[in-house]
Amino acid sequence: MGTTYDDASNGYKKVTICTVTENVDTVAIQDKVFRLNVGATEEAFRFKYAEVDNGTYKAGEENYEKINHSYNLVRGTYSPYLAIYSNAGELETGCLYNIYQDSPISETSEFQTRMNSSEPFYAISDRYNISDEDTEYVCWRGDCYVNQYTHRMSRNFNDPSLPNNDGIIDNSTWRDHYDVSNSEAWKDISRSDVNAVQIGSWITFRVRSSMNYALRSTDHSYVAEENLMGSARSFYPRSQLL
Image 1 (cartoon, one colour):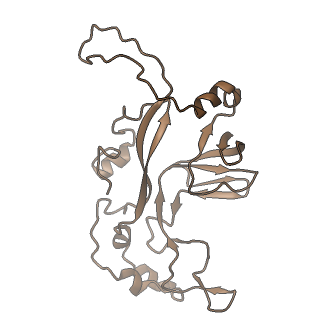
Image 2 (cartoon, one colour):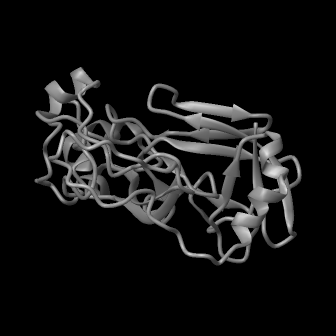
Image 3 (cartoon, helix red, strand yellow):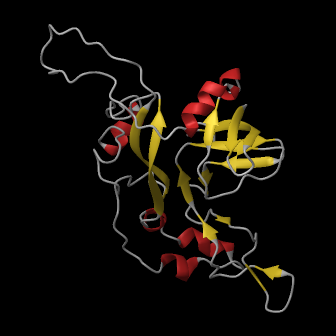
């Protein structure tokens, strides 16, 4: 359970927050379902429709039908994210929210005073030479760290046979073999070509946090993934976004 502060209504909203991680494909909060993977890396014809299940609407009719060249196909995997659900109604999309623990500190006048203050942030210590090991450092906790963070929101699947492949041999494999009325033709869709399509998005934003995001390194805890890809998990800008 968490709390978000809604500045427009000048109050707080109680929300339920659950992490959707790589080890959990689907998470449900009451009647809402949150997914991490859309489709399957092993089968090229697996995907989901966005909003309309079966393709598109017929002109002038309320019913919709499946079509071969639908505009609303979704496929790929999402990076870990927070699933947020509110009993007070849907949260507005495309906005930034402050998330606080469900504790009395969120209601204190001191916390609210600092939020509304326009005073500048100050350094937490004097400047020291980091190579001087004999120096006793005196530091204050400060308000927070200001970090710039880039999050990869979604990407295509890594092909299980060719995980590093980024070249497409048959550009028309999907158009030629995907037929809503003939599922037997789906087996001829080239999985490696579909998985090599460069799709996805990322976002860069500024974060104020009690953790210093600048002090991080590559992640070697995913041993199987590192052996498969030839490198440990990294982050931007240390490694380029592919």
